[in-house]
Image (cartoon, rainbow, N blue to C red; front, side, top):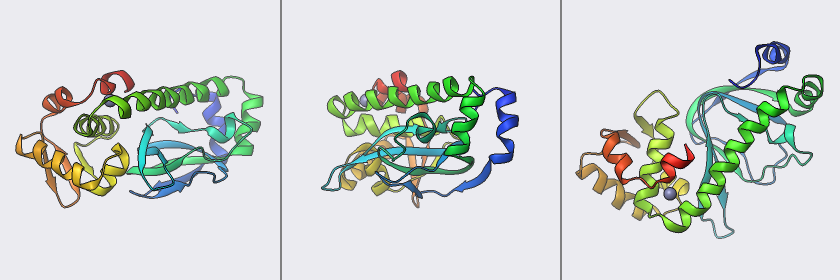
Length: 214
Ligand SMILES: [Zn+2]
């Protein structure tokens, strides 16, 4: 995490375990006990909430340099929502109990983790208003831009179904919007991938949450 000091990193080194993050992998289900703090080196993970009926929506994403730190910050360490890998990559994890020990030894660590948690909470707050007031087309454009800002490529591996889970829309609606964006030259779709061709046009179509929350 860029916010941690070099000293803090050095002390954490012996406890860090490399983890691969596969696209679509579910890291936690809501209610799972979170036994590790996860630092993201590459790729993106998404925090996703769902209804009993199975409707889902992403409420925050964490990319390179970010950390999923819930178990080291609060005494309650169950996952508040699902956590899935929305863009493959890798990272490092450290056992939550060891991390808590380091937090009490080095008082600079917890503020750094809280700054990341604040960023996630800000995204969650924005997601509430986004899903209430903005259209599926606006949300889809925002999501593509937000994830592409966090990865070193303009090609995003995502199916219409997965994209629907992220933006809270059914697959048919996602297909309609994606086809329209492709016809207008904003994106190109190919075999479960979406390539961004015109960022400026996509940004013009995205809701203002893109500028507010990223
Ligand atoms: Zn929005």
